[in-house]
Length: 153
Image (cartoon, rainbow, N blue to C red; front, side):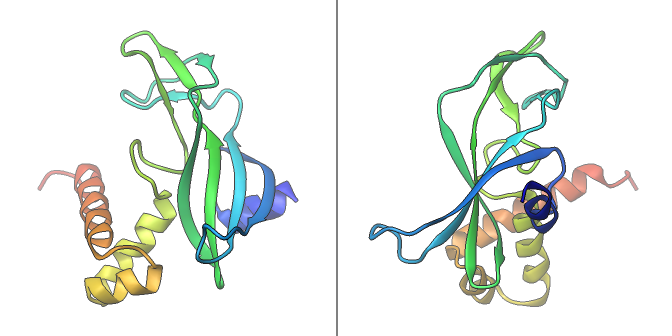
C-alpha cells in the first residue's frame, strides 16, 4: 500500500505510514488522511536547507492540503521533527512536499497557480475549494519561487 499511495501522491522523499477516511460531524465532507513522514536521513534545515541530524520529534502534528483524488479531499498529516542545524540552531525540519510555513503541498500550489493562468481567481478558488484570497496568495508564492529559480536577464 505504501508504494501505491507514494505513486498516487507523486511526492519524493516520504514514507506513507497509514491512510484513512476521516469522517466526523465537525467536517463538512469526508477527507482522505494520509499519514506520512520524511525518509530517514532526509532531514534538512527549513531555513538554510542543510542536511542536519534530528533533534526531537517536534511539537505536534501538521496537515497539508494535497491535490484531490476525484471527489475526495486529500490531506497529508505528519509529525514535525526538529533538527539541530550548526548555523541556525534547533529549528523545524523542512518537509520535502511543502514549503516552510505553507499549509499546502507543492503540487497543490502548482496546480492552483497553473489554473490561475487559464481562469479567474474566483473560478479557481471554487474549483479547488479554497478561499478566494488563499488562491491569490498561493499564486504569488509560486510566482516568487519561479522568479528565484529563473536566470538573471
